Image (cartoon, rainbow over all chains, first blue to last red):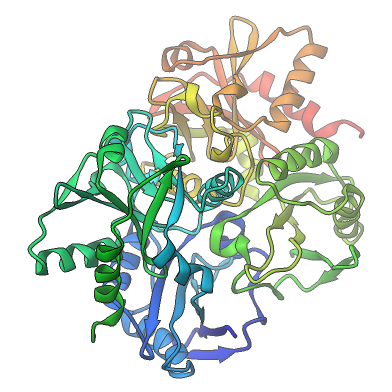
Length: 284
Length: 284
């Protein structure tokens, strides 16, 4: 079952059947990928880390020069879905804001809520196979021009989805983008965290990747456990030398990497369980 | 007035009011920019160069591993709109195919038809101001990895639209992307053609840019006029040294460039008129 809520021009959220067509043919979200989104884990009937997600959504919208509705309206939109959702079920909430119809009008704002899939849940436990894929861009130049929207979570994910299909075609579960100058960037919809000599390391965000909400949460876990954390330039050699790897996202949480480019990697399953217990079990 | 036609599961095109919502909240066109499109000039009641556009749409769809409906269905979709359109009015037809709902189902396929704007028409005559903008990618590496979708006309245009806004913010009408290694690529929705010592020159498409249908048509014009044509690597120095510049697209046709980065450029208005007469006046 999937739920859908649409934010009206009066900024009131209305639940409508999930298969109701809600976007016009000229909606700039559809014809230009021109909009922003967030995906949020829902548990115990509430969106997890909603503040961090709405903060990032505001940053993405600012990069696109897109006027979001007031934050309280977005919170109410999420709240309307969660109120109609069985509190015992873990769900994935997607909040979308497009630039609205090309012919004029306010942004199109809506949210959907659907169950976490068995596949997503299994990946937290069984791990994932990853393929590296060249993104064709040098890491250092991606943030130089703001119009390139580096670090903004936009609706223009055609390349991400093509990379995911390419990884699957090669027998993997996800792709990991690498820059032309040899730095590891991010997954198609996830951030990388590595265990290196007892530290947790993730790629620096000034190379144009998305700042991960789950990655930040894992770093909070690490700090609580006395594990040092750092943001670094990560090379392919660093990736190969790391003791353990995870891809992190809000719906998958921490998925241990069991192979890279077909080469088996050691998984730290005890640590994976502790991380996911932390990510999934805390009270808000 | 705008017209909208939707291709049904039976591959029959139906006209519906243009403001009818037709896309579901989870349509992958809207939430992932995952789909392809073409924009086609309509005149004398018929889509101009429809074959070339549907050829390119098929190539784009192949790059995205997206199953398009049969070509006859796309032709009928365009035909249904043109039949309802005043034959004396020049229009712009947009044909869209998305990957369909995330929850499953066939691609979402539709087309819209609306008038050419006065602004678009004026740019053919008065010219446009252009800003160069770094795209942050080296030209030579863009086509190395097919998953990067170089040369495919996808719905993921968020960066193109941001670049257009940035150009407008700086007082220009359009942006012209430049690679990190100094090669001129393409406009946000247009191709560049330069007059150089009596030849017509356009950037090579193996640097990952879109192959232009209007650019190809202008080269046919040139060949008919005995003007030599060539596809080259175009540097910023070449851009500066050229005798005249045009940005070409299906709805704007040939827009002469009247300035680059605030520096006035000579426009060859007599040649512009001959080109646009050729582009706009021929029988199909």
